[in-house]
Image (cartoon, rainbow, N blue to C red; front, side):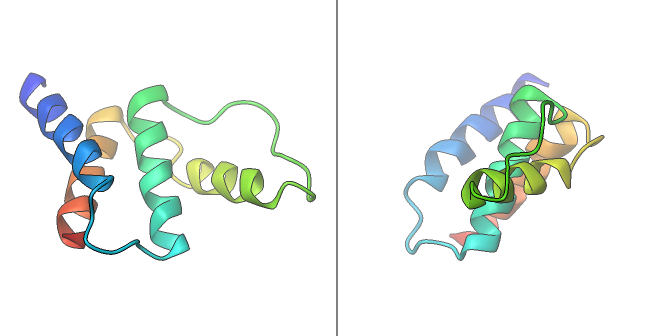
Length: 84
């Protein structure tokens, strides 16, 4: 577990220094996996239709609902590695 957490923390740092900015769909996937790994399942109401960014983030996070923190961390690490 500690090894996975260390690799996750490293991937989080590396995600901020990618050679080029990923497309919006990939950024949402990164966001959703990070939130799932660090906070668990999404809670609260879905933002209203006027908050497009908040709504997209909420929907992306809800899309990984039920995934364990360890699985989300590993998927996050793999995704960031594929973007390098």
